[in-house]
Length: 627
Image (cartoon, rainbow, N blue to C red; front, side, top):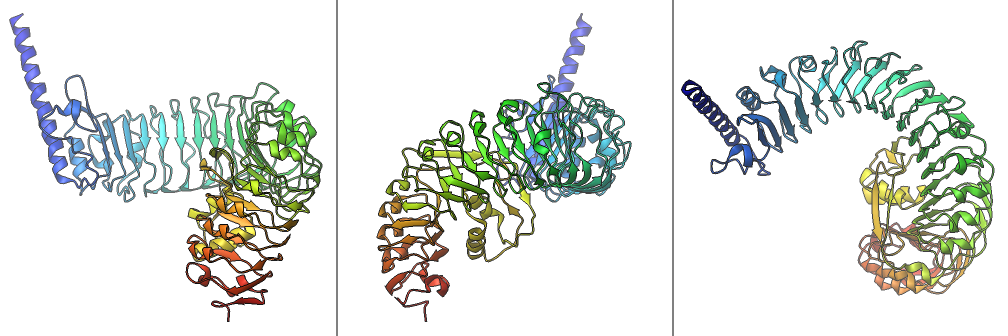
């Protein structure tokens, strides 16, 4: 027993000595790096390094098992030498640093179970990247958001569970045997690279535990698509922004989210989901393909759908009258820029969970069902612009208290402008509405917040519109017309060119206490512009152009501190431009042309930076920038 005690004491001393050596290695590491965010400020000898050092965890015997580093400047091969001095290290995480080492040159790296090297923009592997893939003990590999180049050439390790290579510069075709040993693989993300080629139908046949696959934003092509019927656990598949063609692949009953947007799929099966009430599919996104015909009929078996986006295709036919009965959970219904015909189903209001209906740019006709506005309590987004809708604008709009965005522009709607609409975005441009503009449009009680889960992302379409990503989401989210967006963004951004985000790429939220967008131009409105509109604290855009408005421009409109665009043109407004307009510092677009205005253009602010055409057609106006 005495010998046992001596051995235990000796082992304790050895363990303590080794642990102390590791803490010294880490302190030496700290002293050699640039740490602007003070990530390693807790690393000092006054506290136990296993318990109190940030980013460090230890085994029961006090040996370093986890090393997590963020926002560091790592010189040379410092990290590799440090790893080699930590023989019990199992997990390594380096985020947002300038790590440029070839990690696979470390003799210790292939003993790790987790490697997470994400967001290191200067990172590239100068030696064989494939050596890392075949590490026998590696379970989690995350190399996302780096600048890693090269091809993926060898099969992944047999115990790998998570593989994330997204947002890099990988290129070439995927080898047929890449996933030959992928029995344990649960998560695969190869998105946002330069991968090419056709994918074999049996590519994932051995990956029976796969739950999520993302192949988005590459250059994969071909009419065949990897079969997913052998993947009973698969719930999420994103193959958007590639060049796949042919029919939309069959969907098995366990899949929950499918995104095949921005490909060249041309047909769908008669029924996309296997059988009524057995499908678990919640999100189906087929935006910007080459789909034609009555595709809506083919999704009616997908009874669990919450998100359906078929926008930017060539769909025809009518919206099925049974849509609410067959898709009772539907929340987001988007099919804009298609050729849908017929009337809006009268029973569309029975879709009690609907929050978004976006059917802009179709050939829908007939009336807007009044019940859709009064009975659908959850409806926040209603976008039916650029159709052939007619009849009276429903009075029930005044009762749509939860609605955030209303877009009915460029139809043939008639009747009076409702007096108590409480939306953030009101777009009724290009109809035949009559009556006066209500003073009650200026605000609503409390604060309204909205967010959209709209699927359409940066679709690169040939519209000729110049935009900037920092601006376009805001305007489209709030409903501004494409024509007005082009003019305003050109003024705001100097005409820089970016891809066009017609709808928010993900969740974009905004809260206001007043409307942020009002466009009632090209109607038959009469009377004065209510001065109460000047109290809209969150207004970004106001257009009442091409109506029959009279009276003077209210001084209060000069109090719209956030307004970027204002169009009062082609009316019968009289008097002068209020001097308060000189304080509109955010203003990039103002049009008061073709009225009966007179007097000098106020000095200062943005008014003198505008094009002279903004003031044309007013014989009595004078001063700069007019000649």
